[in-house]
Length: 273
Image (tube, rainbow, N blue to C red; front, side, top):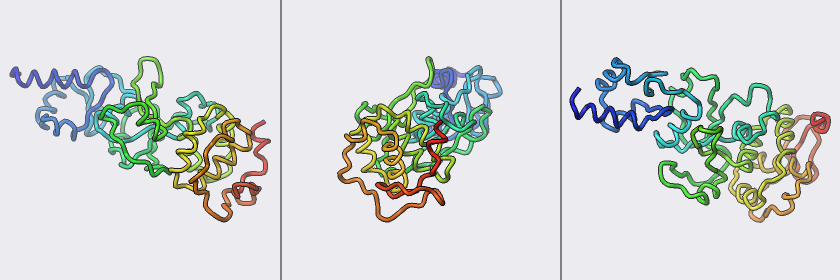
């Protein structure tokens, strides 16, 4: 192998480290031809865990490395949110059995097809842009804590030694979860999670409520928070928060919340017991 080609290989291997993946698209954009990549694979420098994506031989295929590769390597403004973000923050015991292993991703752009073909124990679920009208930011540029915080996002390390990822804070994740609620079983889940949300930051909650487009999510979030009498709720600034008009029949035959005009299951207390 020529010195030039050897240098390109070394640069790639350094870039990949122990857990990162790169797509065919990324490789082409960085000057790695299909024939050169095929040579790296045949020489056992690279392996392909799924079509159109590669990692270094001996690398560890982990969901954290996959998400980091999408966010930083591929430059996709995806974040871990909703249900799975809450499980990362220690609330997995409140989730329905099996849901803690489903990684919920949000963003304006659908992830590449190879994401669902990777041989991982976890599976990925893409839930679109979510309920917010906040501006899109690129994770490939240096982001200060406040820039992420203003969107209800934060850098999160899932475990010691794992990659640091952009994830929803508890405030944003709860509103994302409320937006996905479509039946009584999901209301029970959201209610159990809301009971544990004792330390939400009222200013951040107010900001996210103002930028949330989902009337259902906002009403459900506030109704459940009120049910559990969280101290932070009375400090949430509701100026400019659009809660819509009329009633919302979330659960057929449910009990209408007197303040937020949304129907909730009448047996919520029994399900918490």
